Length: 98
Image (cartoon, rainbow, N blue to C red; front, side):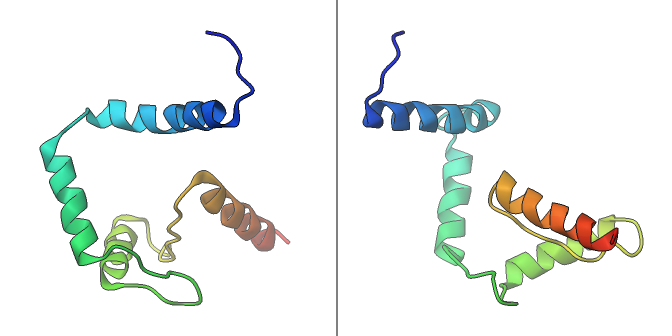
């Protein structure tokens, strides 16, 4: 495979590297996954979770996770990617150890 500087080709390669591992773990064309995604989109396709706002499924999940963790670990932070998870973790650690 040659090296391409074409922006569209690079975008396609980026998406393949991001998406392929996730789909390989689950398998391709699984109807139960497509049905679960469709059901979720019908129930709640988007919700703003900033500024203290949330939604019932997120609150229930956070309560369930908090119930599984050792005592005192009752603050849950949901993130959509690694950067969104790591940045607040570093900030929290830095704040705690001041």
